[in-house]
Amino acid sequence: MAIDDTWYTEEWADQGSAISLKIKTKLCDLQSPYQRIEIFETESFGRLMTLDGLVMVTGRDNFIYHEMLTHPALCSHMQPEKVLIIGGGDCGTLKEVLKHEAVKHVDMVELDADVTHAAEEFFPELCSSNHDPRAAIHFEDGIKWVKDADEQRYDVILVDSTDPVGPAAGLFEIEFYRQCFRALTDNGILALQSESPLFHTSLIQAVDDSLGQAGFAKRKLFHFPQCTYPSGWWSATVAAKNGTLSVDLLRRPTLDTRYYSHELYAAAAIPPRFLQS
Image 1 (cartoon, rainbow, N blue to C red):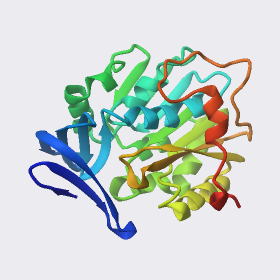
Image 2: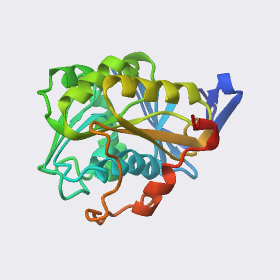
Image 3: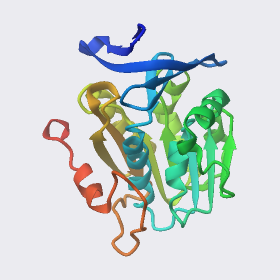
Image 4: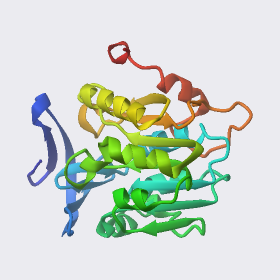
């Protein structure tokens, strides 16, 4: 990551590429107990939050990521009443989950309270549902939370994590997936961000293999554009505990979305040929 007076640049050195956003000013620079949090006002992407120099969220394109991590999973479950979000400190995923009327309770477990506090100050549009009576926000270790959870406690678990380095590395390991499997109800659904289909093919394949070994009989990769993440192309992997994974034609909730639709569900789940085994 490099910043001069007018540009924020995130380099993807192993891929020989980078992204740059023109900035107006820096709004926040905070070292939390876990990471450096910076927030900028950009010229064309609204506000930008970075964690340790890497893009976390922008005001312009975050809705694509949040909708595609959330709605394919919740729309694949007949009655998603109890939901767990691991990570998701900017609260955009929480906001999308609470658009589903079937949801009765959401636990959001974020390690770094400073991320959420910064989002509440600088991205209030993402935090508009934080005080919904169905929501409970916990600043704790998500891996431990899942390990300590009762069996079959949740209908849907969403893993809204950063890249698989540092504290987030454990969220990509088979033991974590096994604990998620245990904490899900019989018809439970797990969804996690799974990086770029173009840049991180081997990671996507490893995640799919690990989910299978953890007991998830059915997995689907949903891919979508995300121009401020590496390669501009991102993915979420959705896994079903009992092997059933599709939008139920009789239970298609009406959702206020800008990118996701039930028709898009089917299209986004068609893998590009180079990812087909």
